[in-house]
Structures are given as C-alpha cells and as structure tokens.
Image 1 (tube, each protein chain N blue to C red):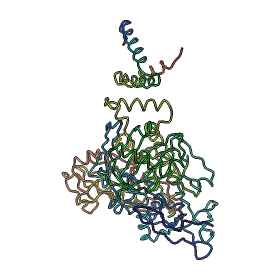
Image 2 (cartoon, helix red, strand yellow):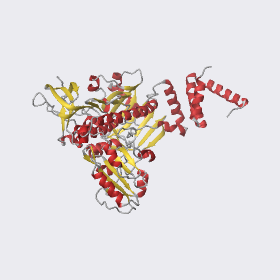
Image 3 (cartoon, helix red, strand yellow):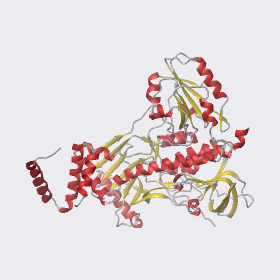
Image 4 (cartoon, one colour):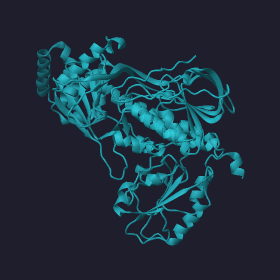
Amino acid sequence: MHLPLREPRASLYHPYTLYDPFFPAADRASATPVTIVGGGPIGLVTALILARHGIRSSVLIPECQVTEGSRAIVFTKRSMEILQFAGVAGRVMQKALPWTSGNSYYQGQRVFRMETAVDTNDSFPPLNNLQQNWLETYLVQAIQAQPLIELRWGNRLLSFTQDTSGVEMVIDTPKGEYSSRCDWLVAADGARSTVRQQLGLALEGNSYEGRFVIVDIRIDLDLPTERLAFFSPEWNPGNTILMHKEPDNIWRFDYQLAADVSSEEALRPERLAQAVNAQLKMMGYTDKTWEMDWASVYSARALTLPDYVHQRVLFAGDAAHLLPIFGVRGANTGFQDAMDLGWKLAAVVNGQADAALLETYSHDRVGAAREIIDEAGKSTRFMAPPTDGYRLLRDATLTLSLRHEFVRPLFHWRTSRAHAYRASPLNSTQDDNSVMPVALENGVVFPNLRLKGGAYLYDQFDGRFQVVYMSAQDTPQAQVDALLQELASLTAFGQPVGLHILRAASATPIGEDDARVHEVAPELLSQRYAADGGEIYVIRPDHHVSARWRQFTPGCLAHYFGHLPVHAAQKES
Amino acid sequence: MSIETQALETVYDHLAETLDSIPLAQQSLMLTRLALLMSEQIGQPEVICRLIDEAARNS
C-alpha cells in the first residue's frame, strides 16, 4: 500500500497544505482522455494547457502536498509566457523577484558582468526567481478553479499496459489499489520516471562527474536580485559557487563537491553550515545570523530520450530529458515541452488531428533537447570542468580574466531560451521562408508586441492557429479583402484561424476596423518584425512561426492549412 | 610569417628561463595561458588549431 507523508513538510517560508488522497467511488475510476503522471510543475502546467484547449485530464500525484524545498527557482521570460497561457503568470509575478544581471567573481574581483536586455514589447522580465513549492501552490490553486482537471493526490502509478487505443493503469493509494484507463498517458514523473523505467527506455547523452549541493538559507542580505558566481574561492578551490536570491529572504547557495566527499557527508548540517559560513565570510558578512531551510545534492547530466512518443505514452520534462541546471534548463525546458505537446494532444484527443501530429512533438522537442545538451555542455565545461584539459583551460582563463578583457566573455552563461523548430515537419516548404529575414524564420517564437492601451499581442493568441498580416503603406483594400475571405473559409484542426493585422501608424487606414487591427509605430514593425509591409505569418498555437510569405497571394494560406495532418475522417468531411 | 633565428633564440631562452622560474606544477597552466594570449594576437582559429595539432606531435 502506498503511504504518502501525513505530516506537512517543514519550511521557513512556505506553509504546506495536506490534500485528501483520491480514491474512486467504485474500485475503478471513470476514464479521462488524458492521465498525467506526476504533479510537479510540468505535469500541472500540462494539465492547465490541455484545459485551455478544452481537454479533460487527471493528474496522479504520489504525495498529498506540493514539493519539498525550492528546487527550480529561476523562470525565464519564455516560461512566463507559457505560464500566462496556463493562467498563473499574474500570481507568479506578484511574488517572484525579476532580474537581469549576472556577475562572475574571481579572487575578490568582479571579472564579468552580464546584462540581459529588457524589451518593453515583452510582457515579462528575462528572468524571475520563485521557489518551486510556491509555483506548484499557485498551479494547484488555478487547477482548483478549473473543472476539467482532477488532481489525484496520494496516487502512485504502480504499473500499466498499453494497446492501440489506450493505457490501462494500476494505481496505488493509501486506501489500496484501483484500476483506471485513459486514452493517452503523459509521463511527467520526473528524473526517476517510473513510466520511463517500466518501458525500459534508455536516455542518451552525457553524465558528468560533478556533484553539487544546493542549500537554501533564510538571511537578510542587502543585495539586489542578481546571479552571483564565485569561481574557485579559497574555501572551495577549483570549484564554483552560485548564489540566487529568492522571495521571503531566502538565498540559494549552489556549490560543487570535492570528489572525495560523499553526498551524505556533504548534507550533514555541520558541513553545510561550514560551507555557508565560509562563503558568507568571503563576501564580507561575518556577523549575520541565518537559518537553514532545505538542502539537496544533484549531479550534472545532459541526457534525452531519442523519442518522446511511445504509442499512447508521451514524455515531458525531466522524464524525457535530464539537463544540467547551469543555465536554468530544467523546468524552463519542460514548460516548452508542455506548450508544444498541449495543443497537439488536444487536437488528437478532439478527433481533429491524425496521431502523426504527435510525432511532430517528438521531432520539435527532441531537437530542442539536443541543442540544449550541446549548449549545456559548453556551460558545464566552464562551471565544472569534466577533464584535466578542460580544468587547465578554465583555470588559465580565470587568472587571465583578472587583467585581460578578451577572455571574460567565456564566462558567459548560456541561459535557457526559446528553441526554434527550424526543421519542424509543420513548417511550410512552399512559402517564402528561405528568402525572408532569418530572425523570424519558420520555427522561431513569434515576438510579442505591446499594443496601444497596454495589452500585448499574446493576450489575443487564444490557443488556435493565428495569422499575422503586416499591412503596408499602400496595401490595396482588395488584397485585405481577399485575405479575409480566404481566411474565413479556413480551419486548422477544426478551429477557425485567428487574424491580427499590424498596421503601420502612418499607413492609410484599411477597411477592417475591428479589434484585430493594431496600429504600430512603423520603426517597430521594421525593427521587431523586419517588415517592409505586406508580409504574412502563420503562428502555431504555441507561438512558433510555421509559414510566412513576403506578400499574400490568393491560395497560399489555403494550401498551408490544407496540408496539416488532420484526421482522415475530418479531411473527407 | 616567420621569425629570424636570432629572435627565435631570444624567445627560446626567455621561455626556458620562465619555465625554470616557476614550480613544475604551474608550468602547464603558464603554457596554457600563453596559448590563449597568443591566440588573441593571432586571431585566426584555423591557424591556431593547426599549431595545436602540430605541437601535439612527438615526431
């Protein structure tokens, strides 16, 4: 019998709520189209995204409360955009600490400072710190107001079998086992994924030798919210210490362990206190009192499954890939999985899309994971050199950085970013992509835009496919009318396609006077969208561009939408 | 680009004496720093990588 913790977890800042374990009225739970295994941030966000697309799901959560400790603490702009689609960004930003600057120190000297650009046309700061337990609490609160999602607290997946139409699950609870069936199972059950292990799937990539301690303390430090990296300090020679400020006066210390120290030894309270005190002393704090909140040990790995779709089982987040946390690549990658998977799975569950659409999820996101593994390798080899050669180069760079500007950019911390699905099977091959500016090529996230009145373009992206048309100075009304007419007759996976016209403020007004026309400064159109006027973009429900033309020609949209992998029965009708 | 034998001898002696002046354990680090500093001067990655490969040969 599965026995979740019955006591609320200890925390200096986050009060834990115990939820009642779920057990079905009969010994068999009613079927939901989608079951999500795992109630971490990725599982919960996947459920909320599916709900926005109108899909019911249940989420199996082994414990009866949210996660222990702060865990994932840095959320990127892209993650916030996804969390906004999921409906929790406002709540997150009330509490989160936004930041833009990273500092690297060596021998008491700041040798590199990185500023991340802030753009007023984006609706969120580039990086935002919030403890994962708070994030999960806000996600749970949003789900409690969402009738399409059922949280099954205290439910652990014991075993499952799948056939061509669904997955049969055996679930263990404090009241015993029950069986349940779903059409699709999303494995968001984390790094030690039960689903992945039961299917016998192997991850591909690299494991690094290094082990790292993360420890959270409550302390009042008069420092701004910035990332701090200390290279090879006297108290931990050769290793790197990272620090992040979290809400509630909590500070994260993250440091590499010497090879001869066991993880158990490293987590002993005296040992943790020794490390924290040594680091504080090095920073000049000798009389500060502090309290320990939570600590854990992790190892740096860069691994992915080569395929995220296994018949009726779909992998997302750490269950699909394990990525080094340098560059905040864990949860921030998982949210992008959820955003890609959500609309595709919804279209398949609705009977509008062929299961081939799910193959594009694997294609898009495995490709992104491989890019991340490559980038993470570059960060890791500087932060935690894997070999003697890399250590020699890193140490040489550290000393040179004190007096030589040219090596300092090597400290640059490659941060999680929105990945471009350049080779996505959903990208048009018959459009003008190859002769248009690369910055907005097929596969990239279409940049957000601040509209007159303070709203943003993304606020109007409602989960359907969208078309954005850049109207030119001399766009003839007949062309706009032809575009509107063509669009009105189109659907994408059974849904009408949204339209937004970005009109240069200097251009002659066009007949279309509804809310879909946004007046934009002409220089903004050229800077942000490389637009001369007349360009047309197709944007997927997850904000990625999938087709574009320099000018609208009748039939171009009909041709693109006519080739999406819709369900055969829908195609005939 | 080339270097006159007399100039090369100057470099030869200076490098040898510098290596002798630092502990054995620090010599690799010093040579690595030297390679990075010279890379900045040369500025051509394909040339530098070819020289690294050449230097790695023992025969």
